[in-house]
Image 1 (cartoon, helix red, strand yellow):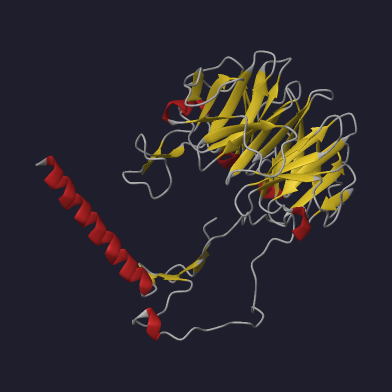
Image 2 (cartoon, helix red, strand yellow):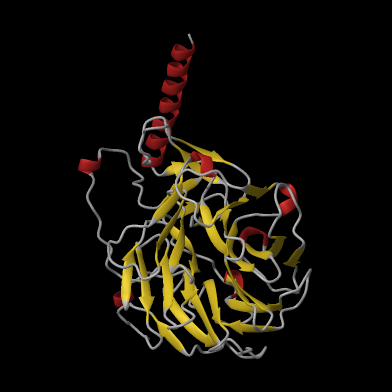
Length: 407
């Protein structure tokens, strides 16, 4: 009886989906016109293709960089940021402070172009010895390119690793020479040799239902107590045991859980349970992205993207706990911050504020709605950041006269 009822429910859902597909094929659903859809009915074979090779009448595009990740080398005063909008890696002097009336601060060098194997950039790391720059592609390319201290322009990487699709966060254990990457689509953390290149396989992988990894983004290491911290957006794909995974696996389904930070042993491998989890409404987490760990203070800093805030938790926190500090408010200038880095030597936290074309600097102990101690801007202060990143489609709402762009 239950199986028969399940079949009826399945056929009903399939019928609804088929109806939506037919409606979309005619280009209109509830006042929306979908780009690329034909307005007249008929078989696809009967339609004449149209090639548009003329210039557009207008374009919606941000001409300034969208800072998605930031890294600091205090010994060389290096500040390196990745730009998700214009596909760039930019280096500034970390001591720069853009004057209020200045249009922007010019970078010391820019790495960009087809030879770089760098596009949808979301993570960055500076080697403390060689000053090489490691960058992560998230969606449009599956490479982790590494650039020399002097690379600039359309430079070829010194080496590159064929990373899994959908990597986001990077952290390195310099003592063991191991590189940790989060992988969104696989709900995994992969660990490589730091010098890995080409098709080299990971040393170990943390993945599986017991890990409670759910769209992992940021990653930070506590090398003193040998811990891994991973921030999770909360959405995940669930596959039955033995299915091998994959988006088309039978009986696979999705789920949405609250954002979280999961904690594992530094040498964790396989389908391992977290040691503890930070999760709940008191945490204020909303798209927790890149993270940084302050080992002397035993504090975990989290770039809280969708809440326009920086959250600070104690290293031993667990459960539904409030952050011990939070930087948030109009004075802070923080808007959609995906990236964060700590400069322990100079007592600063730097924030990649994607919504304002800026990197913002605060004292390590900053709390509340505080102004940044200085700002490095990649665009004018009055220029609105469009935050268009990897748009996969476009729609037009005829009722509201609005263009809809899913990212």
